[in-house]
Image (cartoon, rainbow, N blue to C red; front, side, top):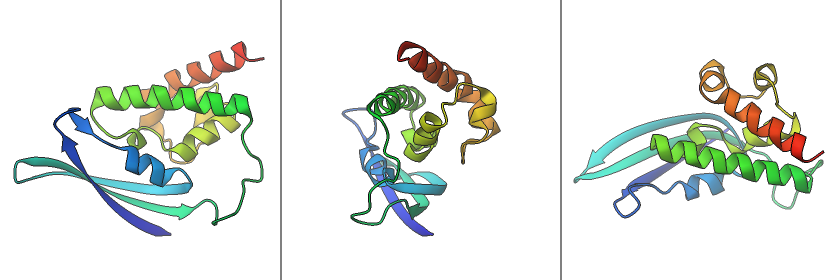
Length: 146
């Protein structure tokens, strides 16, 4: 396992934290644990994020079972939902789900709460808070794209 520490500064213009760096970093990683710390220095707000991870793919290696175009669309829809939730709550998107979890949700066609219990890193609290919405998005998507 590896660790990466990323610190984000509060952006006065957008009134939030730009989490794009973290999202890009986590794209090809299996995230095992995330630790966060909020702090202020010199009248500026910061989030410090420690990410404990493994590389999913080695450089040049390709996915064995790449996502279909419809699966990619569903991941895009889930990312939009996740972004809205995170912005409303005022924290980075990966605190809701990371990209590997979204991919597993799509691959496993998680349309029930029970199926979400099999997604690594999604526990009781996240299922209670977001489970019904995730299931609904996946269910509607697959109903519309039969």
